[in-house]
Image (cartoon, rainbow, N blue to C red; front, side, top):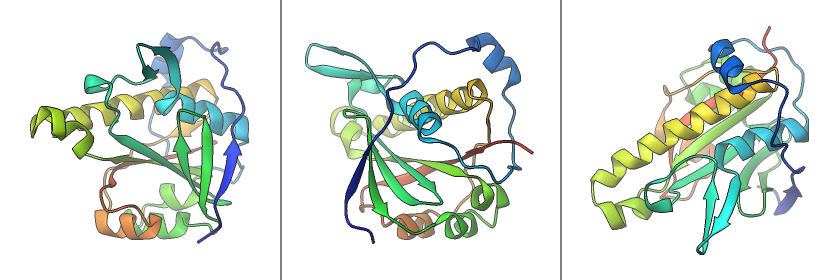
Length: 199
């Protein structure tokens, strides 16, 4: 594992060149990517779309995706050739957790799906259920899954707006993904989203 290192992401842009309607129209699952890296500005936009801060009111920091009770039970991880990172929405920073390229291992854990191992970037959405079940009981599990869907759609639409492709991946071995990413015991992987320039 790497020593802790923080990366301050570029400030996200709040007005793009493509309308929301056009992004919705053009969104398709893309499973093949060319070997071209994403830059930090693109990564910044994708992570902001996932969980970025949009407003601060009444002691809350509101984010791009709605959350039951504003409890925000998800954690976002990013993998690229430089390593494994954990996203912190409040500061719009990444923390480097490992400086080895884990995409091949993640692809193997995702039943050998090449879109995962070959994509320049993978975003992994994880759940911390207790943040919501403490207030809403077992129904909170449903709220977490709904929220993960909101986050994923934001990411897919932002990818289109950036001229990128993405694909939703739900087929993977949970334990293997947790082991590869060295996730805390309460962080449960729900979703893998490979992103890159489509072939």
